[in-house]
Amino acid sequence: MAKTNARVDLHAHTNASDGEHSPEELIQIARERGVTFLGIADHDTLAGLERAVAAATQAGDIQVIPAVEFSTDWEKREIHVLAYLVDYLDPATIALAAKFREGRLGRAQKILAKLDALGVPVEFNKVAAIAGDAAIGRPHVARALVEAGHVATVQEAFDKYLASDKPAYVEYESASPHQAVEMIRAVGAVPVLAHPLDVTRILPELISHGLVGIECYYAQYNAREQRELVDLAKQYGLLATGGSDFHGLNRMGHMSALGKVDVPMEVVEKLKQAKEKIK
Image (cartoon, rainbow, N blue to C red; front, side, top):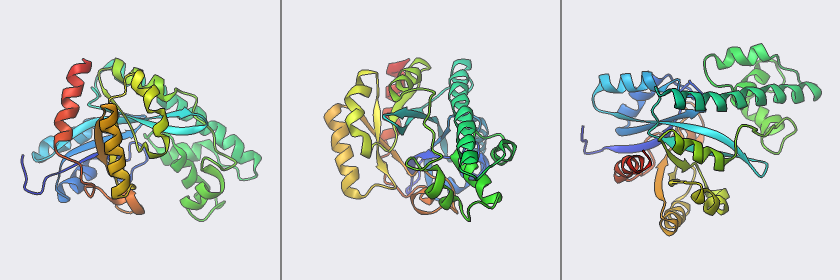
């Protein structure tokens, strides 16, 4: 499996949540970019993992690190907690993902109610059709706003209505990040705080609840910011993980940077060691 240009990318999404590509397409893109270890972490759903693992097994030269990215709320802001090396066939893990998806569904309904009150109505069945089998999220609402003619682009939908400081934003009610960390450990997975640069002050609290790592090598962070996070991880005795947060080849900025973040190969083994300690 070893490659001279082997890469690690522990944060990518499929169209099972808000990614652009199917699990099979994502595996192929990762192979083309020399990614040997690919973390697939869809939002609040495990739906893409079995197909991705099957595609990677068939390819033979790439290993999927199964994960899920849970959406939580803390101090009126959205915080994501990654669960690495999840057993995506385990009933307890499936039930946990379902709990978070229910939170997404309720949130979407409240967002639509706010949009209706703002005079830009969107039908729920339109949003559900756009989402398909994926867990409903704000990107699906944004696309529905575009289709309804209320905005010209998905970005405009966020800028006018859906961003955290805009009038149709709704907080999550499913769990706090502290609870997410505990629930992730309870199903034997490894909890890691995603893109933590703006919320590092929560670290001592999350560590007390069992946090194992933080996402230090991240496509949207510059070299200095990544070094600061690595130093912070060392200070707290946390695992330093990383990835691109890839959403698709046609997405702007860091969301198209699959395999372009320099994540140390040793992180994969350290994640596996951490999982053994949690079991």
